[in-house]
Length: 87
Image (cartoon, rainbow, N blue to C red; front, side, top):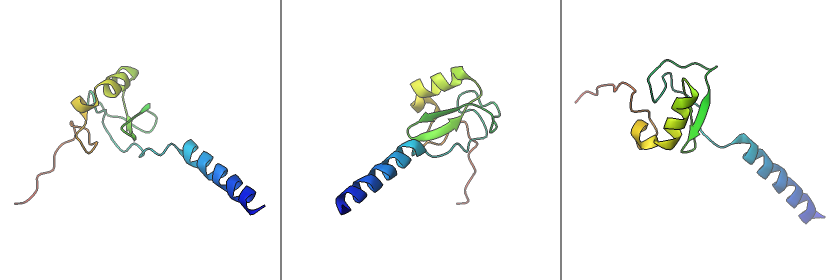
């Protein structure tokens, strides 16, 4: 009986994790491809387990196909303005 309850609980938790996606939510304010402003209503594409808002479907395809062209190794869009550091 205990094993059945454990398996049932495990199955439910596995399903919940699968449905949640596991990707980091989109936080970008500009399209990583063209640099156009984006908002919550814009389409989202997932690349490298991270979500990005894009301005159009073509940019989603381009970002998915060539992520290294538009994203740094840590996933930051390359067209984000760099903040100078003191030093």
